Length: 261
Image (cartoon, rainbow, N blue to C red; front, side, top):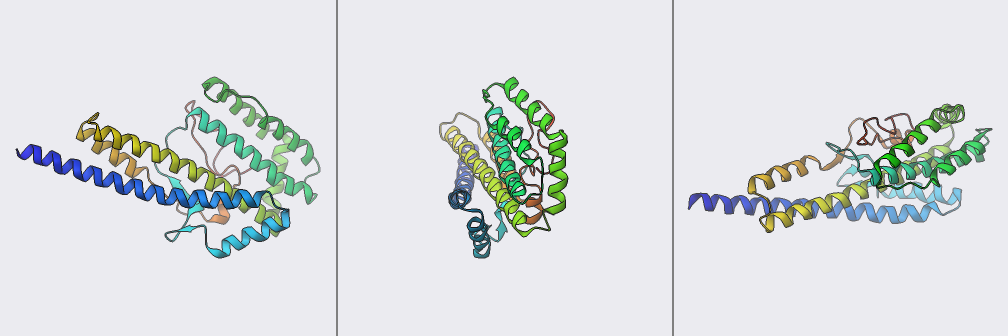
């Protein structure tokens, strides 16, 4: 009888813990979604107006959630990304690179910037079966090859030289980095919603033991989204398009942390 009571108590505690995790995740998910909607609207504005409205958003403090800058939120114990998510995130970063590169071109900072822009755009149009592991790996190699070309390396050097000297370029870089981090955050929240819902369903239908449910709940709790230490939002902007080294099942990361695009 005592064992049955212990099981009931354990079940109730696990259920309450999952419900709390779901509520917390949904709250921050809503925040990410609302921000992304506003940032998507800004992306289509004229350069000057976009910068003005983005800086106004910063003044509003909308990028803070419970006192933490959500642009610095990351997921602990990151698992290798499945090929579809890895491919889509990488292609999105290529487009972000094009946007920032265009700002440098408009400023006349990169003489051969148009040619580099064309090369990057060509990659964004490559047709890839995102569910095919080998196809995504081939795309990854194409991106890596482009990043090692003289044109791209020259862009990297130029970016590092001028990103803090030109206020417009700095704002553009921060806007792009912010949008990318918000997009990634929304993806993480959406995936976490599904993981929590799946575990709750298994627990309710007795498809897993209480011990298994307890272990999975603890794992999900450890993988909660939290602020990255020792990195400011401005530092993140310096690493636009290349700030997160997503792991891929094949091993070597596509985007090496800290190099930026």
